[in-house]
Amino acid sequence: MDIIKKREEKVKLGEIDNYGTDFLGLLLQAYHDVDENRRILVEDLIDECKTFYIVGQEPINSLLSWTVLLLAIHTDWQEKAREEVIELFGHQNPHPDDLSKLNIVTMIINEALRLYPPAVGFPRKCDSEVRLGKFILPANIHLFISNLVAHHDPGIWGDDAHLFNPERFSGGVAKATSNNVAAYFPFGFGPRTCVGFNFATMGAKIVLMMILQRYRFTLSPAYVHSPVVHFVLYPQHGIQVILHSLKSEEGPS
Image (cartoon, rainbow, N blue to C red):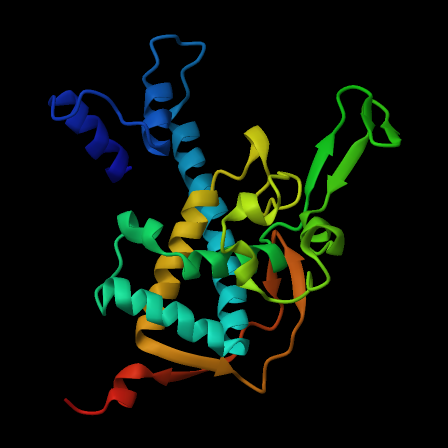
């Protein structure tokens, strides 16, 4: 509520001329809408903010867990990512506005999302009959569209579809998928794309960069690979890694 009140106060005092175009700003505009039929209640506003946070937080946890696992196994890519982060930011905390400068880290994040998407599929309903290739989908049937299947399809990704290879995203997502939007959709696609998409990827990148600046990490022998789905895809027994402090490696100054 404090954040909401501060934004409202700035508009009231004339410090800003609108509530903003971010998610909170759009909700506040709906809350203050002159049309009572379109206006939302304060309870709705708070609930939407909570939903946005939770929907963004869970994918961050999932994405970060699997990315750390993959880099703990593929230490060559871990070193490449660390070199990029140190070159761009040194040991300073990264700023969200600078994330677009990252190439290798973005490739790694994209590949982690391909192999371990937070949501493994999306339920949909056909409003009308649809022809899909040689199939005819009747109206009112329910479908489950699995991105996990699409992301591991050798027909799309090649014979190494099951392997961790961030290089496939070196030219961006569009090039990696030959502009096929149905080949890669870790957060869904179209108007129902997950609202936490940018929040999740940005948060995961920032935390990952801070880890890379401070530690090397390798996979612990105690790790047991057991992905399960509970709202998002996550490691049932957690991710056990062995951390090596970069500061201790540098020795006393």
